[in-house]
Image 1 (cartoon, rainbow, N blue to C red):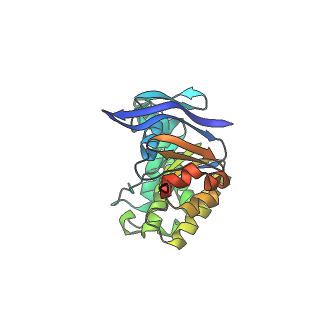
Image 2: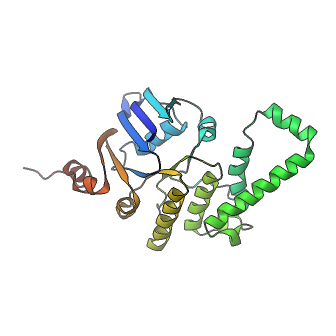
Image 3: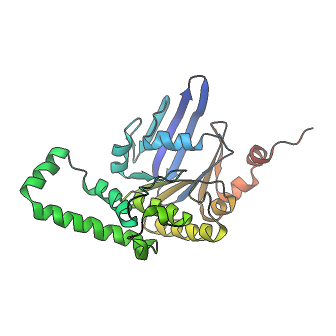
Length: 259
């Protein structure tokens, strides 16, 4: 079943077309890779899907519903979460507080007026909600083997754990679809292997994963399907084996031999 798809998605910045009529689809329950050379338009496509930017033309459909141009917070509440190429943690907050922020976003989905009235009418209810947020956040930290670090400041974590904490915060929103933008960037081989195991565990929770990644070992090892962008256009789509053997993809990465 197709969970998300774009139709002729285009994003132009003046005369520069960063994404050009891209048809991209994500099948439910799979790990999908989005790859391509630097500047191919991968992060721009992510931003246009997740509401950080709006496409110039085309549509984004999630579970058959048109979400084109919807703001990021509404898209997140629909069930799409993401991480970023550059880590965006609250560095001066603790590990568990970072995850709780994601969980607050999920539990606080009612209108502000409703939450204000709840605060007046039921202090006990709010205390119970806060306890649920804390407990659920600790469960996500346990999922990442980080429960012993919950009271550490985020800035004091090793780099790989900071990456994992950002993923944990995104998962705290209970997404159906998780976008990971270069999750292995800057990781050493041991951290990358651990990350691969985590991504598989996330998929086993029935959360569909889409990732941008330059680590081809990671992509070819864990992805069920791969889409390749080049100069803002879709170059190829298929299984890892099909992509590995695709001559157009090889030329995009390595160049074409002169006649």
